[in-house]
Image (cartoon, rainbow, N blue to C red):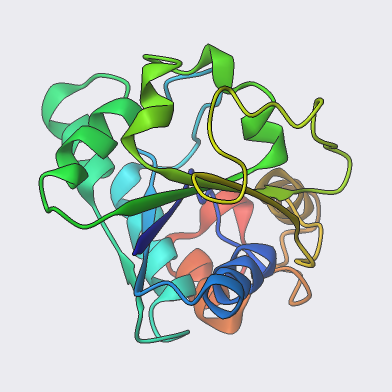
Length: 200
């Protein structure tokens, strides 16, 4: 089975990298596809171009495990259509490959999934793994008609509680990159593009 981990990755941090390895170790997926968001469908905005976030994601994830690959499907779609990208469109496109898919999302996303495009139909396009993030307890562990333990799995992640906004704000404030938040590979990429006010 192929797992999907999406996000803006603006920028990716050590929490993301830990989570990717944790998902592979816990569920032994055949592959894990990292998919940076093109243009977010909901309220999130990105301060960094899709092509740069794609480069950041490759710096963060490629090399962690041979089963991990970074896919440009949403960034390319956003660039060509100039429209917001949705999980519904992405899953429809990926399903044509024929492999069973599992979408991996945080409890913060799951708790507002009823606001996603094509809800509840989007739930039927794949299996779901929901990891509980600190500060975002499950809202009643809604199953939305999915079979718990087969189509839907909840678990509490052990990944460090770091946010991309934390990383950005820290750099904007100090001009420096906190090595406890990002890998050296991501740090090099941030410095290359002088992102968020990074100073060499």
